[in-house]
Image 1 (cartoon, helix red, strand yellow):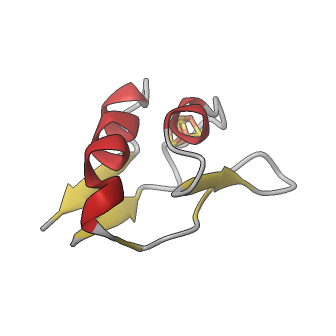
Image 2 (tube, helix red, strand yellow):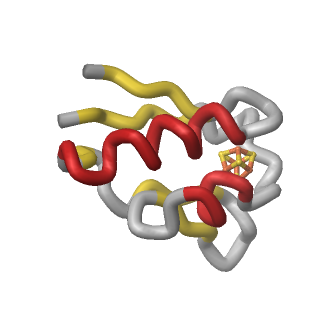
Length: 64
Ligand code: SF4
């Protein structure tokens, strides 16, 4: 199982993470990222990791 950490000060609301893994990431009404699954099950781990790499400002980190 993965854990996702968000640096909310970095997030610019680009939404690439949501596009890559909509089960894991969303955007709130202010356009800031929200993590829908703070503990990501193994079946979504690869997509969640790809989504963190897609973030252009490195606002997302994965912990194992
Ligand atoms: S891709 Fe990065 S900057 Fe864009 S919404 Fe997701 S966390 Fe925020």
